[in-house]
Image (cartoon, rainbow, N blue to C red; front, side, top):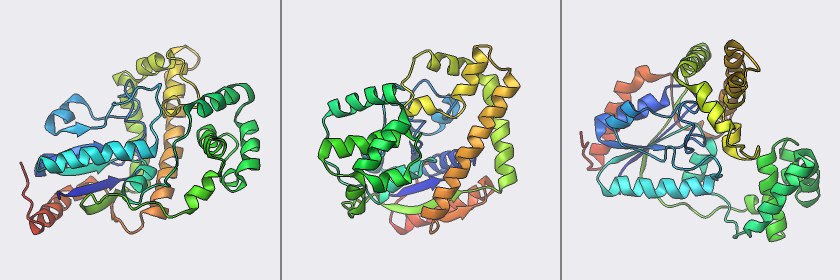
Length: 314
């Protein structure tokens, strides 16, 4: 079996740069673990690697789904395992990088084993959401799965839909499935688990700087084009950070500075949620202050590969 490195961290932390440096130095393949970067048409808004980065090392699972689709953690984990296996088969290091904690959990710990659910159930529930709104569906969920409903906010439409879909489609609460130990996931040869977490002041500065750069690179036009698709508000891509404020600017509703300010607030809130997850679920991982540790990390990973009889391809 080949080797796999997992790199997590909040948005704008520099984790993608570390992943690229590892892949380029050690002959690796970069595999996306960000729930927004899986969608096409959102390259700028989701800070996907650009063409220059993609030319330096192979990148997988970026922009592979249309914004009109929904990518669950289970679906992503299946795709990621296939890409990891392909990388190992070719003799490459697999570098899995992203900010979606649930994706890493699904990959390494597994998820509840749920039975197949008739797609018509979700279609019906989507219609109910459009007519009644998320709070009404949350109240319905409270009668079918009170344990799950207690953990969700009334406006969390995506998770409310999932809870109702499972409860109505299987006759059993999702919380009951989640309480059972999940099946052990396949082994993927993890040799390092890293969290890139710069000091707060540095992270906030990076967030602001990146948003200002995005505005000059076409984020406004991208937001306008994606908004024109008329995505269902419950779809993950419809909730992309910065989509609404930049689209509002494109429509002349707010000025650019206000759009950047609002996108910054969204991004800060998202980074806070990511850090909360990481502290709660990734405390045993190796925590890094930032990209200044790149050379040491590359040397450490290379040594671990040698110990396993694996050779860097570069």
